[in-house]
Length: 600
Image (cartoon, rainbow, N blue to C red):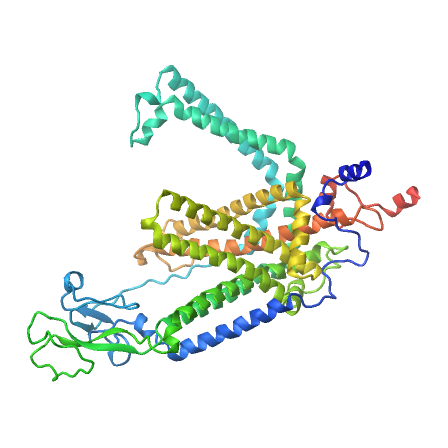
């Protein structure tokens, strides 16, 4: 028992798995590997083939014109074919749409209004202004922003502490003044004029306490977690250097974006064609049923001379034919369409993460940087992932998809039963939604780190997920600190890029600044805020894509760093592969040949 206790004291993290051992043949992502999770790979391929078959069936039997174009009372489409010059639908009596009880509801066309509807030509055209906005070099800006943050973080923290200190002093000064004036919240009670609350002592006391607690947490974090914060900063600096050696990694999110766009387009098109599959069913009805000569009309054949005494008789779309195997299976096919879409989208994201992880890991484990970095590391990692690990990525994507399906079901149940829920049911539903939201976040975190291990060691999903999870548990505090510091820097980076571009676009489109040799004038715009919104959204998407690469690089280097600490000891046989800045922070060093001779 004493021996076991002594071993536990020397290595307190043995309960979280066996630390990585030194392997002289290991020099980065393993090249000799085999296919992993073959069963899940076969299942994924079968689902893809079935998904393509569903799309083909929907294409053959669907007609999206029913939801893309309006129809008149006789079932003719507006804006296409013979009615190409008549794109609008005109209602003879729009009030009947709201007041008549003879309303025919349809699943896709909404409400069929019981008044004559004819095609109307475009009387006036709408003018749209198209503006071409020059892009910006988001890659270069992002790299520089991260480098600036990494080098100036001590001054940023000093400024934040100074601001908090000034806020504490100001809150105390306001609190003391209103205390001397005996201004209390009991004297004003509740009011909708919130500015009144700034004139009582309790408000400033509450703000004083909150700011003091935040600054105390910040100071204690800096005092007790200073080394771990320095490690996080050093890893971020190393990520900047890594990306500078493989700039093609910044373009890889474009591939992920295109693949996701294909998934979304295929899902939307398939859902649309499935929803409109089946022949439309029409019936002859009398829109004005109060006339005695029209009350008995209910047929399926219509001609202009068939009902001379009932001018309101017309052929109206009722529904789509719901008879037949295809029509009875439409709901199940839509469910399959949604599930397959989620699985494919999650697989595309997993493919991007595993590819980037393989490229970044090849940098970290290179003994001489950049000489030992393989050529075209991103392309090599992409091909290696597709060749060996489609099944593992599909496995992780399937687990995430199942959790997302449960969340969708809970949202649907909550939406349908919201009006009939009591307090207990609402509480239970809220707890379930919160639990599965947390579960989805955890699965994404676990999958992300599992893909990094798959990219490095080439093992199956379960082994890689366990290996990554145990490694993180053995370094739990470092994980938390790194995650929060990285999130903070990512947030500041996105804020600066999006905010800066938004401010510049505002001054440009509002006419406050002018570009030389430019014929653009803000007076040509009807609403100058519209291109500003487009530019801001576009800059956010670009910044998000760039910083996602940066975040993946930091996570990959972090896992490699933790493995490096466990594998190596700094001797000449087992030298550390981490950067000099990381070794300096941890007081580690690699043994030189002179030191080795002296030790011998």
